[in-house]
Length: 149
Image (cartoon, rainbow, N blue to C red; front, side, top):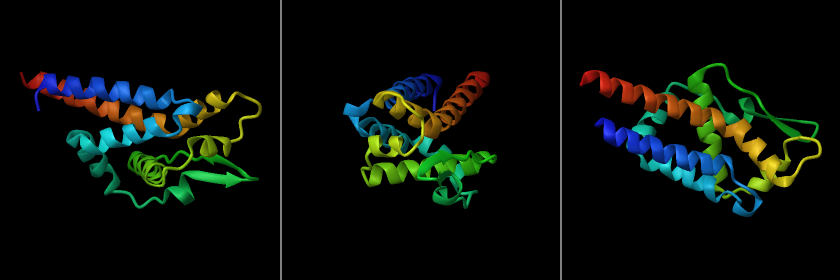
């Protein structure tokens, strides 16, 4: 893949991930679905995800999202492959089942805050690291292509 194509993918990914991270109540999980679709439809990103998840057996429901006293919290795995797999598997559940973004966000205890703030906190807590991993990977790929010139 050439540098121009990688830049285009990186730009599109940053735009789509920004839309997802800035979702509001009215959006429900439309941007989360678009985020997943972009990952699954973009071969270089999907190959990267697949290369990480194949080395992990983590179950997100037992080791990533923890429920205590009726509220959920995120337990961040220390292993990068486990972390990527947990986030991606949870993304699949959220989008395959068309789960309510509002409902999921409200399961995380944040005290008193506005609905949209709660949703954005939830998305940042759960999916922002996945965005960072993918962005870092795309930058590394662009640097690699640029060095080969």
